[in-house]
Length: 242
Image (cartoon, rainbow, N blue to C red; front, top):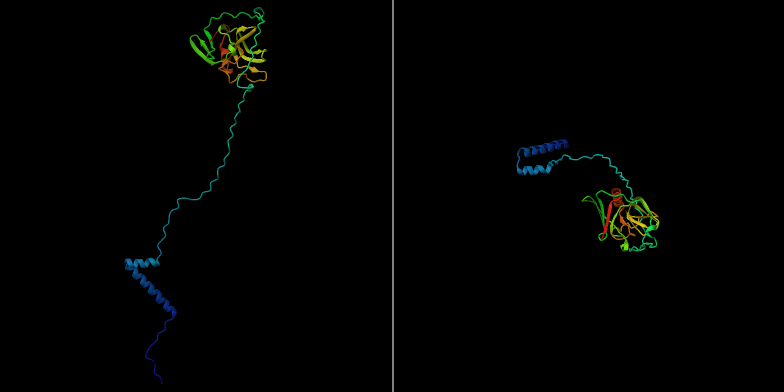
């Protein structure tokens, strides 16, 4: 007959083991929590993750329509250039027609110029190719001018003896706007006028003012000639000098 063993074996179920393990872990954590030391803190950092810092968003998406660009068209009027006279070279070759067969008696007769008692005075300086216009002692206009080639502009004291808005020169088939006639030369009247206009509409001598270019007349720019024409009176003295 066998005798019962004196040792007693206690069998613990797996569920009980889990409960005991959880209690042990909790106790250890409580111990470390209440005994805050640098070593315990280091151990706790291994189990507890540090909180992640959060930043406030300072921007946001917004749906903004893309602006449309419309090109602005500014209408411009292209300048109309006056046709220039065609020249074969830079030198200007012109013929001065002087018919010596015409006598003084054959020259056209015009009514005498009325006496002038005003204070207007026109001075043409051939050496300077310039015109000075005075009223009294005041110089009111100073114009670049062109006189005749080969000294064909006569020097002396004259006066305005005719005024024609647009004179025609049949000898050369051209128009001379703002004509102020000043003296007769061999049956032809010389005067002061604007840049001539050829029969094809081109402006003769444009760009050549300031040098002798004419057939004997005193030539001014288009604008300057109109100013002088509107200002001058019949009988206004005109002096031409070297």
